[in-house]
Image (cartoon, rainbow, N blue to C red; front, side):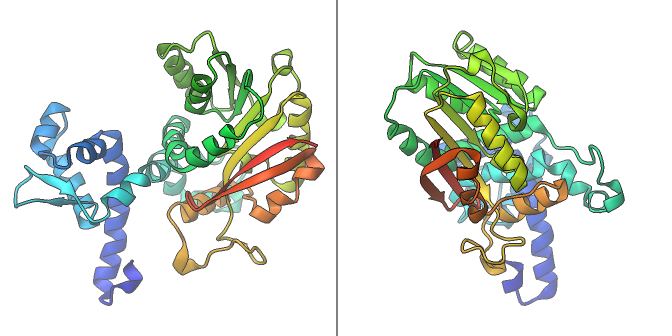
Length: 345
């Protein structure tokens, strides 16, 4: 951390270089370089660049950025043997969090001076890349939420016939559920039309066209439809905070209860607020202990004007919204996250 570097020039250089490295890490994942290095343990950079039609000097800059922050290293003086660095595995685990920040939320953070001015905070005053966010969330779900999610799924006391995923993004979670339950069908609901088109095309190419459909809609404003009548499993990941503030959340939970009258379980997972405005929360973290993702997640949503609930906030709305929490699965990453197992009261 820069605060541990005594020389001020070196400390500030570390801040600057880390900012560049964050984008380089995200790009290295998207370009396939991180997976290539993880699988092969060593990569000839010039060969990799030629095989993927990438500018060699630009790739040398990307790898140098990662080398400066100990994510990769050179075994020798040339570029023929790039190997994992001291922080490679931890960086690989968190690669999609960097992608969420530097790709999905790039425009938001580049417009901080504009976004924080109250006179500009009306209408649609910021933009994010919904396709990039869906791409990142696919990996975030897989690496960070899936172990606890599948523990909850394995504890279900019924066989799933029809599942709805709110904020379905890439549709990956729905496809995984349909793999587990070959007789089941699914519906993905998301407010982001471009992400839905990508998800639908991917699902069709993988053979789910007759079992999986996607609907553009706002999970906060859903009402009963005939196709929801027999839904027995409801899932929602990385968008529960969009239900808030409190009065809106209670209203949304009530609407979901009415929209899905036969839902036997509602699995909802999200990161919670643990850094900004957390006085009185037993889950709060102090500045020296802020984990990866927390600052970007909370700062970014503050700029968007989206209220992020604490754990205590969530625990105080379920009963009023018509749900009972059977169990909470607490996760350390990303940020301080949780999966709630809910059922109708």
